[in-house]
Length: 515
Image 1 (cartoon, rainbow, N blue to C red):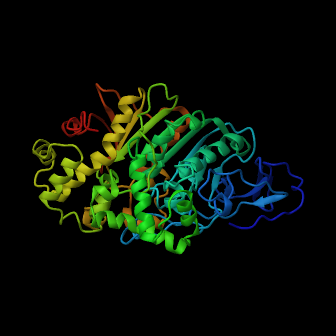
Image 2: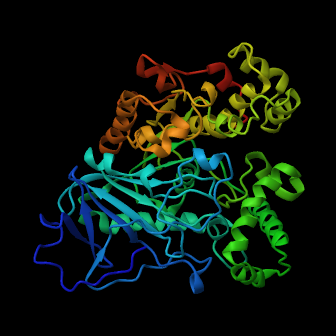
Image 3: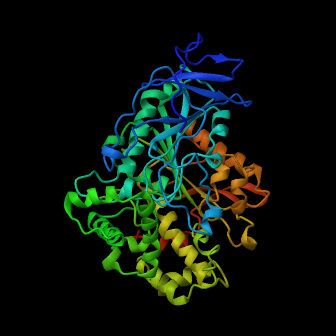
């Protein structure tokens, strides 16, 4: 993050007014005045604004503390650092956007894009929570540029939050779910400050993908988060994935053993705080690889099912109910799990035995379920059926359960198939992101989407997200148990959208009473 640059009193223009010479604008927060830069599209960006204090030193592993105030005007021209983390392992590092302004201790920051920098705009607000399995990812960089939302009349806010050990490892004497507490602190910052950037604090939509969507599923059940957002969009992640405390303790013990830490109680927490990040980050990244190499439930508990050692820690995760007070839009991609099978060449290596064992571990009867999946995919190899089953267990069915629980929820499916890897990558995990942000031309997405993803699909998907944030209606009927209305985006090359009643009903029915 660039240092604060006191420049004396705010220039004669009041906060929110524009200096044509500098093409910058200033807005006022409770911590101080920030200066953003206005682009040729009349969108003003304010980047790297702290919403909480750096969570290191005496604040390590604690609840987020208030950000310090400043005098004068703080330049907000560059993204702030995101949470320290290990890089994605190949080949995912080339496929998943992770560009940012670097990593660092001052990672609890956010960025704002607005078409109306100043009070009185009354615009809907969208707050983005990035994905990355609670261990990776960043809320900043060109992949998640919020300018297209601002162009279309939305104030867009992107958030960085703590990850991995600092965000989610269960530690004695420290609060669980520090990454979630960061997200709540960011939403509180939005409540307290966004009106000064042209936003309406009573029309906030929180949206997130993968771990970001799963985070929202938890936030919906958190009393402290109630009232901080009016609407929510959960992409490829819903209200199911979490670790019970006993499993979280197993993860802590395993990481401590990996690092040679033998302490207990608060001494254990202090010992983790002394481990240099250059040792801690590779060790936490190695946990997932070790889970695959040593699939022993005694070591990993229920984390063995989703292979995520860092997740929210909860005794239980109730589904949201009709009185949650939030309008919901939920969905998933048709072939999510191909992201984890195709680039690694596992798609054609998975055996029938592995397929049957996984289906059984997920709670299905393989003899009953696998013929149903195969019937809809004639000639499919075990790896292709594995993708279908894992996609349902991990992503689609949790979204359906949310929609079944909250009347008025809207449901979507993203079905456009990427041409990459000879067309095998398909409608994989993360493939919808560039379309949501209407950012198809950024080269960071080319490895996943190819050279010519369809703009009309981005117009439809991005437009639905904007409409939902503004009105609560994305443009199609809500889901119910009778019709199960689902908007399918990119179902065919000829149409960007197609409304479907109960897609793949027989496969969905297999999970009744299971998930």
